[in-house]
Amino acid sequence: MFLNLFSLAAKSPTHRAYSLATTMAMQAEGRPADPPSERTQELLACFNNIKHQVEQAASGREVRLVAVSKLKPASDIFAIHRETGHLHFGENYVSELQEKAKTLPEDIKWHFIGALQSNKCKILGGEPLPLAQLSALAALSAIPNLFAVETVDSLHKAELLEKSRSGLASTTHVNPLEIYLQVNTSEEVTKAGFITKPEEPVLGSTLHSTAKFIKENCRWLKLAGLMTIGSIAQSKSDQGTNRDFQRLVQLRDQLSESLDGMELGLSMGMSADFALAIKMGSNNVRVGSSIFGERPPFKKPTI
Image (cartoon, rainbow, N blue to C red):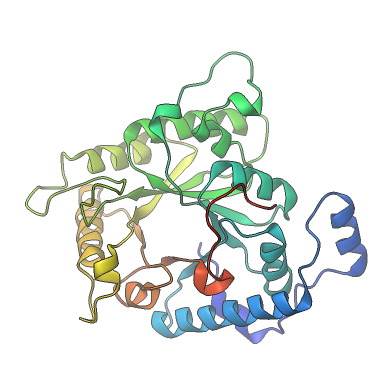
């Protein structure tokens, strides 16, 4: 069930504020310290502004806002979570997500939205390996409060996630992972994702076979829908529509029909185009820089 963002608006900004004792205990355990008060106020103003825009675009529909916090300190996430009760945060890098998940409250629902490198994937068997030796997918699925993986683009990766999550479930209470199949709607060579030509039927495609496999064979994966990253040109278009989003809606409808009417969501829309994406049917938007500010050049993140 999607988090109802709009019910939070009626509550005071500090309805989830932790007590001093709780904050001190978290810091003693290595949890992040509070950011400067000016930074907290800046974050809250940006977050509440985006949340309001999501509400306006949704016109009463439930739309999940994933606050994308990659390369931002854990203290930023901590401040938003503490002051608003927001739960859904997104990360692009496995190692960064691992460290933040260890540091931040366990009720956070993490979304992985970064690239999954198949050349690092391997099926693990026998004795557990040290974390440093785990494949990216195995390490990712070992995060207990991982909520969703939004960038699955092959059946093989779905198999590995299922196998790894099943192993974790044998020793730890976890819920099935929500899975979005990434579609390269713009057919750009720099982007990952399934490519299905408009003239080609979905039935019989690799997209369909992967979705069918997850639906029928994966106890620990839940097929949530399709995801795309629209082209920059379409995101900046002033035409009032977006061909990449239109294509994803069409594919979702065709895929749903081929899976006996299975309900499937749409993860599309980021900082530059989330309002239009919502109006075109998205129920999961990924917003980063409009909440947290511009990101620094990539380097090992400060946790």
